[in-house]
Length: 66
Length: 520
Image 1 (tube, rainbow over the protein chains, first blue to last red):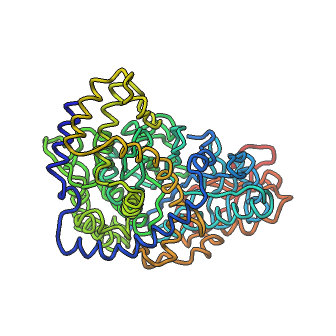
Image 2: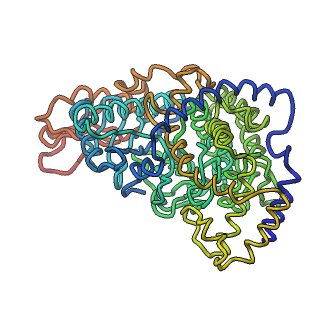
C-alpha cells in the first residue's frame, strides 16, 4: 500500500512530464503522427468489426511448443 | 573488410476459426506443410519433417505446433530483412492456399506475434544466429549489455503477458526471459543460449533468444546490423561491453522493457553507477563508429552506424518521434489513440496497474496473466477489505472511480487482439494496412526484391550453393535427396555435397560408400 501511495505521488509529480518532454521536434512528430493515428483508428475498427476478442485469442492459442 | 554471416528464425502463430469456434490448429499446420511440399521447390530436411527451399531457407515444424522459417545465411542486414520478408511472403501464400484449396470452411490467418495472450504463458520466438569465432567466455561481458539495451529500438511493443492488468511493454518477450544465459533455446530461456551448435566447421554460433518478430524494416535493419558490429568488435578483442557491465542483466531487461520514458537509470557495476539504456547504446555506437572502417568490420559498417545513430536520436526526442518508424512506438501511438476512443485515459493506466498489483499481492493471486477479478476484490465480503478501503481513500482524493478500472479490464482482450492483428500477414494486418496507406516511415533503401528472394538464394557463401542445388535436384524424386545446413546427400546415389564451410563458393561433391554413414 505504501508502494501504491509512493507510486501515486510520483505519478502526480510527473504528470505533464511523463512523456517525452516539450519542444518543437516533439510537436512536429505529433502533428506528423496525425495521419498515422487516423489510418490506425480506421485499421483497428476494420480489424475488430464483428470480432469477439476472447474467441479470437482462443483460436490463436498456442498448442504445444515453447 | 571482413565478411559476416547471420540468419533469423521466425516462429509463426497460426489460427483457424469456424464462426466463433477455434478450428483444429494441427490440421491447418499439416495442410500448410503438405502444400509447401507440393507447391515449393524443395529438398527434404534430413533432421525433421521440414524442407529446405530453393532460396536456401528452411521451413519446418518446430516443437509443438510452430511453423518456423529460417532465413538462409545472410551476409548483410539488407539481405537479412529481405529474407525475413521472403519468409512472410511464403507463409502468406501457403496459409491462403490452405483456405482456398483445403479448408474453405475455416478462416485461417498467420501472425508474426511474440506472445500468446490467451493464457497459455507461451511465446513465439524470433531467434537470431551470428557466426563468430570469439571465445565463448567473452560473450556475456561483451554482448549482454548491448542485447538488454537494444530493446529501446528492437522491442516489438505489446503487453506484459503476465500482468493481470493492461501493462504496455516495449518488449512482451522480455517477460519470458528467465536467465542471462541458458543451456538451450526452450528451457529456462536466456538472453542468449550457450549450446555449442555451430552447424558448420571453423566457427561458433551466437544464438540470441531475446529478440522479437518486428514489422518495421528500419528496426530490423538496425537490430541485425548493430548486433553484427558488436559481435565483430568483440571478436576483434575490443571488449566493447567491459565498460558498461550491468549489475543484474535480468532486472535491467525488465526495467528497460517497462520504461516508456527511456530515462530510467540501470544499476551498473565495476564501478557502481547508473546509466540509461540509451547511454549504453551510445557507448557501443561510439565504439562502432570509431572502428567502422577497420579491417575486421564488414564493408557496410558505416551505413549501419548511420541508421543506428538515427534510431538513438529519434529515441532521445521521446516516444512519439518514432511512431512511424519503430514497432513499439507505432503500437503505443495506436493503443493510446484507441484507448481515448474507448473512453479511458491512457496516461492513467500505470496508476491502475499499480492498484491491481497491490490488490493481487494482498489476495495472494499468482502473477500469471489471468484477468484481475475486480468485483470479487472490492466486494464487501472480500478478505482484503482494509486494503481496498485505503485504496478507495486514495481514489476519492484523485477523483477516480472503480468504473474506470472496470472499463479498462473489460477492454483488455480487445487490446490483446489489436496487438496480435498488428502483425497479421497479408492485407488484413494492421501494420500492412498502415504501410499500404503510406503513413509509416520504416523502409530502408536497398531492402527490395522480396519476390525474388522468395525463389532465389542470397548471392554469397554456402546459401548460394544450397539454393542452386535445391533448385536443380528438387525434381529428382528418385534420387531421394536430403538436405541440412551443412550438406546435401543421397544414399541412392551415394553422393554428398559438403557445405560445412559457410563461406564456400564451390560445389564440392564427393562419393560416399553405399551403406556407409559418411556424409549422411
